[in-house]
Length: 495
Image 1 (cartoon, one colour):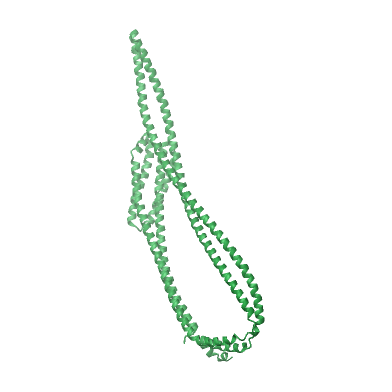
Image 2 (cartoon, rainbow, N blue to C red):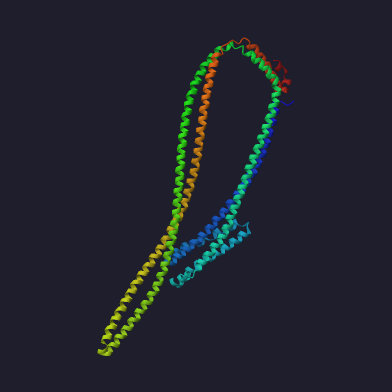
């Protein structure tokens, strides 16, 4: 015969086995999810290193352009520092992509294009230093540097696209792993509930059959107890007094619960206002971010216009050289005409006056040409200074854009947290209202109990006999629960 303890232990053992199975399934799913998440992190690190490589090449190009525009030697150490930092991201990328031959080939193409661009920048600087400014600028104007940069960007885009497709693929794998974990936990939990419910039903049915006869004896004894409560009158009066005090305490608790409900309602309202403010701040930050993007575009346009202005200044200088040469030749011709007019005597005097005026005009043209050349040199210097200042401003705008992105992310998190707080406050408000209702019901029940206690002042002559019957019934119930122990100690049953 199975005792109550064995049946209950069997039910708990079955539930434990099922929970162990569900835990194992969840562990495997979470382990798969962890591996996939690590792979996503690895791909993100590859994208970061690729972006660092492109930034180094861009910085080298900027330093080379600044040096060739201004001739300032301070750009060269920075350019050298960029060249020294160039191998590091390449090494990291090769290590991260060592398990993918196809992506290693893409990386080799990117490294080859980047190395070609870096070599071109170094060659342009060397040509500028060895052959002069004009030769260096002519080398830049050939467009080879732009072609190399376009080739590098195209090859880097191919590798970046491959990595981003891999990120999307691994994100789908993460989602699939999470879905598998959820299904395993959900179905396992449902199975556990079904099994536990069935076991509880079986145990309840078995226990009901075993204690049915004992319950019948208890019911007959309870009928006798209803006529035997004379000795409980004093205790009933004391219970009535205690019930009165409890009623007062419950009333105070009811008032406190109502105050808590009102406070929770006010907290929910404040939290909703905070959510609205956070969302408004998020929108404002997004608008500011868009404005900074527009400013970056305008800065790039200013750089392009300034470079075009520098090229046009060079063209004007070439035209001034031609005008200066023409003025010198005109001056020489005027001097020769004056000499010929002097040799012609009276007949060439008028021609000499005209030749003298032409010579003066040529001198003025030469002087104006020198002034224009000085102004063009000033314009070139201003253009170079403006280009460098604009590039510095562009970097500052980029930094501001990244910071605005971080602020926008922070606002989004704040909005989510405040929304969670709002939900919690509403749940507290609802729970407090339910608690208030429950306290009111308890208050009514206690009042009824107090009234019943005041009314239970009757005699209980047969209480002792009924207690003995209940003691006998308890020994029978104990024999049904622990039959082996009672068989080993029969004297306890007799007692």
